Length: 575
Image 1 (cartoon, rainbow, N blue to C red):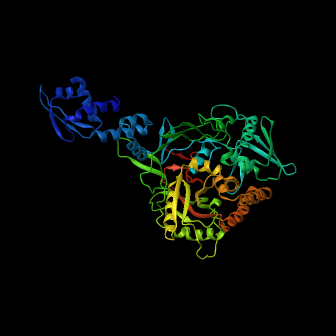
Image 2 (cartoon, rainbow, N blue to C red):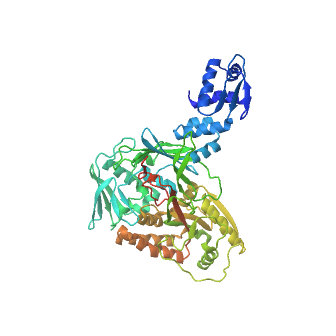
Image 3 (cartoon, helix red, strand yellow):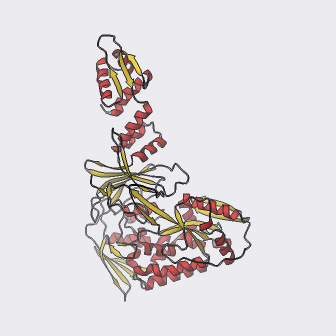
């Protein structure tokens, strides 16, 4: 008999007493369980064999036997729910704990890990919030952009040093005289729904992307997109761009069906994993058999939404792996992103993120340069207090760029009240509170306005963020050079904060970089631009987050990505 059905009979016995000796006749036990004495005897033996109770029968009619129930109902339910979760029976486990979402979340965290079912490797993780739709053409947070890389592929791939390698396109050519790029795609490519990825479909996709506001600045120099043949796409530019192959390696340019730009009832990608389920409670990814490269070793990845237990848990999201759950005492190995560096007997990778939390001075506040400099001096990140985050103070937008130095300035008259705008994010909220506390010491009251991520970016695109100070983040992806270039060129929050004159200056400088540098030299070309923006006090870098990927040595192929997550495609296990 299945354990969940057996549990129903055990629960009927609970009213007799728990964790104590009960003298009772067999027929009374049978009546309590609403079954025959013969079936009752079978049930008792089965429960005893799995350790739920002890049954010592006495020979003779009406003789009282000894019954000892070893577990409270809650204990048994939790143990069974753990076992069901380990076998992927999540719905049954949730029913077993009476749909208690908080308890179910705790069980998911404790049982998260990798396990094999039918010889295939499955990973179960927990995360503190629900993921947004995984659509490349929408503004997305850091973790969603990581997931885009798992679900989609691009024509090309660009690494942190600007080296461009093949993905869906196996070769490409650039004509320096005509400014034409040609990309040659692999044969027999398909989307996750089985439809063909053809040159015509890619032409339709890029032609549609070019019309979207988020792409106009980046693709303004693209004057024509045509399919030369079923396996070749030509991009005709009106100016030099030796790094165009690197630009379209960005997650924004992931290859998706053109129809998905208008509506997406089901997410259809082109990468190593396809979205099997995306609900309020979990995201489940399934390895895609027809992926153009090597198929993923991991069969499924299930990420459950489990809210943070602590308000200051930014950077502590656990990604556990290899938790062994059975009837015996369990062992647990884990893969986690957190900020606890005092770990013994484990492996870990630590890196400072490429990017930072930063503050923008909104041009609408009309603060003079001297006032902006004075505010930057007050809000020096190394002097902010009561702000718990595993990070280092930022001196530029990217850790490897030159530290910016500024001379001190005397006290400047400031408005009695300043407004701070930000999107909902634990680190940004903590930073805003710390800044408000610091400004209050200088007689300045702060109004803090917190928006959802989606509303924040929508307002920026409509140029309607009115706060004096705007907190946001620069998170660079694995294609660091083109990711940094793209953020400076077309980030709506940045450009809505600048005056029209300053925004035009920035765009012109970036176009000059694009025309005269290959992708491998982008970072050198962008550094003085960012430094000038800081020195002009258009923005203030605040913190570089320290990312730590921690795991015990059961999993193989683990490495930390630019987003602080492990690449699902590379993880494997000997077991």
